[in-house]
Length: 485
Image (cartoon, rainbow, N blue to C red; front, side):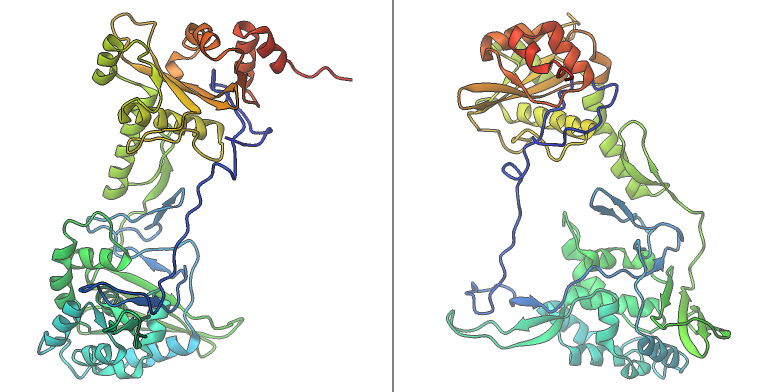
C-alpha cells in the first residue's frame, strides 16, 4: 500500500504501521463495455437500448417531512430516507429549468383541465407495462387521457430536467448479423416516474396502473434505481410533495410579482415573476406538512454520517455501528476458539485458511486504512473470497492476556514477500488492547519465521519506539531518524 510520507498519525494508533500504500499497480480499475447496435441478442431478451444522454443534473425539491435535508451523501453513497418520510430528493446544487419551459408551465397550469384527471381505460398503460417501453406518441396519448392541457408542454424538455433519460429502443432483429431499427423512447419505469413528477408540479396524471403493474415485481429486489424507488414509495408519498422549480433567467432587477392559486385537487401553487419573467414555481401537495428539520450528524464511535431522525438512515447507522463494534470491542468467536484448539498455527491466515478468517483480516485492514487515511485496503481477500496470493500472509491476534477468553480477536497484521525478502505491511490492534504487549508477544515468532523482515515506512512514532525496543539490529537501524548534517 502506498500513501504519502507526510500523512498524519493519530496519537492512539499504537502498533499501527503507517506503511506506504502501493498505488496504481495494486489498484483495481473498473471498466464497461459499450453495447453495439448490431450485437447478437438471445431469444426472449429485452430490446437493446442506447442511452441518448446521461448526466448528474441536480434539481431542487424539498421533502414533506424534511425541508432542509433529504438526501445524505457519505463517501460516494447516496442514502434516501424512506418509509414514507421522503417525498423528493434535494441535491447539493440546484438545477434550473430553461426560461421558456417555465413560462410554458405557468401558462398551462393557469388553464382549466377539461378532463376529469382519471383515464377511462388503463389499456394503454397496461400495454406499456407489459412491453417494458413506451414511445413519445404513446406517452402523449396517455397524458391527454387525463389532462387536456398537456399538449402545450414539451415533454422531452421536462424529462431532461427531471433526469429521466430518453433512449433508443430497437426492434430485435431476426438475424444476428442484421442491423436494427430504433426509435426514441422511455422504459416503463421511467415513464411512470415522469408521470409522478408531472403530478407533483400540478398536472393531472394517473401513474397508478404503472404502480400496480411494476411494484409487485420489485418486492424482492435487492437494488432499485431512482425510478423504481419512486414506484415503490408512490402510494405513501403521493400529494405530500413540496416542489420548487427556478428558471435560468438572468434576472438582475425588476418588480417581483407573486400569484397564489389552489386547484381542485388541493395543490397550492405560487407563481413568481421578476421583471415580467418567470422566475420560480412552488407547488405544495394537498397533504404536505412542514416537519422539523433533520440534521446530518457523525457518530463519534463508528465515524458514520447519517441523517438523525430518519428511519432508513438510522437503520443504516445501526448496521454500521454494530459492524464496527465487533472490531473495536471484540467478543469471543466460537470458530476462532475451535481453531485455537485444533490447529498447530491457528493465527496464520493464508490461501488454505477458511473464508471467515479472510473476512476478519479484511475488516481490520479497513480499520487500518481508515485510521491512517491511506488510499486503499491492503488485504486482497474478504468474506466472499480468499486471498490466494502465495506472497501474502496474515495473522489474527488472539487475546493472550486473558486465559479465559483467548478466542477473542484483538488485532491483525499482514506480510508480503518481494523476491526473497519479507516485509511487514501493516499492524492494527483494537484500542483497548494497545500497549498491552499484543505485538511484542509475537515479534520473536515473526523474526524466526520471516527473518530480518522489512517494515514499511513511514511509521507512527509509537511504532518506531516499539521497533527500537523489540526489533533486530537491522530493523532498529532502518527506523533510526537520519542524522542531521
